[in-house]
Each structure stands twice: as C-alpha cells, then as structure tokens.
Image (cartoon, rainbow, N blue to C red; front, top):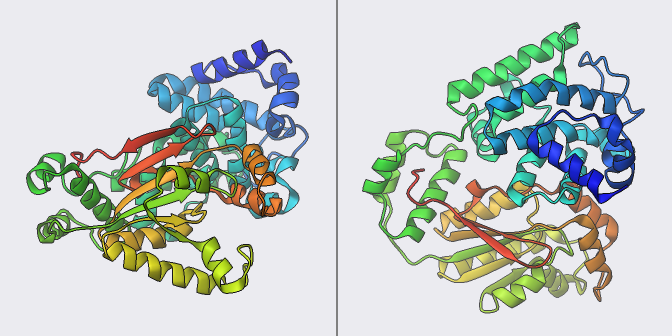
Length: 418
C-alpha cells in the first residue's frame, strides 16, 4: 500500500471529512490491523447496535459524528473523530481474549495509542484521544455511585466531557431497544451531572478566580504553580471544596524551602534510567529496583514489593522534607501508582515535575532486548496496556520525552487560578 494512501487516510481524519473504511481496507490490513481485524467481530451486546460487525459499527459512528465536527474547535473535532475511529479497537482479536473479556476499553486504549503513533500525531492530541477511547463507555454506564465529585473533577481535568458525551451518543445510535433506552437515559444523566458541576466541555472552574488569585498568591511563579498544584490535589481529595476553604488555606501558606520531585512515567525500556542519568545526575535517586537488589539480591524479584515500596517511600519523604531534589525511579504508569506519591509531595510542599516517556511499545521492547538484565517482555506488554498517560493537572510541570530523547516542557499557568 502506497504512502499516498496513508497520507490521504490521515488527511481525511484530521480534516473531519467523510471516510469510507471499506475503501481503505488494504491500508488498514497493512498498517492498522487494529481496525482491519474488527471485520467479523461482534459490535457489542445490549446497546441496540444494528451493524453486522464492529468495523461496520465504527463506520456508522463516524457517519454520526461527521456532521457535528463543524461546531467544534479544530483540535476538538480532530480528537472526537479519531476517537470515533478507534473507540472499539479493544474488541479486536489483537487485544487478546483475557483483555477483551475484562475491559475492551482499557485494551483498546493501548491499541489506539499504537495506531496514533503510526499516524504521527502530536503527543497531547494522542493522549486526549486515548483517554476518550478508554472512557467512551462511561456515560452509558453512568450511575449514582459513579457521580462522586472527586471522580467528576478528575474526569474533567483529564478529557473534554462534551466530546465524551458526543462519542457515547454516536456509539449508542438509535435507542430502539429497552437496553438502548436505558443507556440513553444514563448518557443524559451524565450530561446533566456535568452541567450541574460546571464541567460540561470545560475544566472545573477555579475555586479562586484568576484576578483574586493574583491578589492573594505569591509573586514567585514557581511558588504559585506549587500552591496551585497543591490546591488542585486537595480539592480532588475533598479536603478543600469551596472558595472560602481555598482562600483560608491560601492565607495560611508561608513560603518555605521545599524539595523537588521528578516523577518519571513510562514502561520498562522507555528510556527513563538513561534520561535521568544524563539530565539529573545531581538529584537523589530513590529506586525500587535498587531497593529490591539490596533486599533480595535481584532487582527483578517481586516477592517483597510491599516492603520495598514502604522503605522507598520513607526515604523519599525524608529527602523531600529536607528540601532535596529527588527522582522517584519506578514506572508510575497508572494514576493509582502516582497519587500516593503526589499526596506525599503535597504534604511536604514539594514542586512536582512529571517526566513522561512517550514511546511506542515496539521501541521499549527493542531497547529491553539490549539490556544486560532484561525485563520479561510480558511484563512490558502488560505495563503498556495498563499505562494511563499523565495529565497536566497532576503536576506543576509536565515534560514529554519522545523516542529520540527530545524533551518538550509544559509548565502550568501560574496566573490562572486554582
């Protein structure tokens, strides 16, 4: 298949033009097997789908989304259309039977990430599409127990909830069955909850408005970013919930020496250790692998992980309280693995920099094969499948390191309020 066909496929996607997937079957078979293998796969159950298979269903979703794109900003239209194309790739046989049974959305996120790498898209756009794919079933499964404020805040800081709502409605199609009608009612409840919280199609509104923030916050931009990051985190945890809470908390804060936490995020073989050794040689390294080596004699031995983590966390807390610059050398590839570290950073008033190693799976596997002590490939594949891309709200700065080792830095806007 010629490169011209792939260029045409990509151009149509980014321009939001009508896309005939059957016409691109040869290209998909060669370059995008995640999509090609949807032919003949069931389009899901219980949603009232009329499509013969998941590929035909994807075609229908794109057709429903295409007229809506004109009302969106260009980057929003691109994210939505790409998510429509890839939302069901977790049903592909490439996801593996266990993954398809447990969560086709999570399996689909990893496959979508790989397809987006091949489309050569910018990292922030890729991340947004992957999160839309991962969460695309959420509105149709929405219920009271899932409507908690912290979860809704994190969701709105992670992706555009309006795009998620539109994707869910396009995925549902015609609500002709009882099951589809229930899903439609849940999607409507999801939109209503987003609107109630002021997060439909926008990030959570700041507790401290920008003008008030500029009057109350310190002038030092690094300290402003750190305080804003702390406030966001405690808001997610429910510790700070109102403008009055936020202003009272802010008035109590005093400038003080604080440490810096570098939090690398990436699967084994993504280049974390090489980059840290080159770019942060003076920082104190707290390494889970080194602690495993110290305790068990083997850095790959997982038998004492709880003890390893406890010791490393204690070492990290001591260093941050002493005002040191510290690198936490572990995968930190999921939100659950990061939030405990972020809580510690907030408690010690550390400045947080997340360094995300944004590389394709194939490159991580290739680098791993060149290591003296290789990580089992199944571990890397599993970590890549479970990877949850870090989002800007988690830190004061997010740095993205690509496959060539080039680093792009995204500092938070210290004047935006919190």
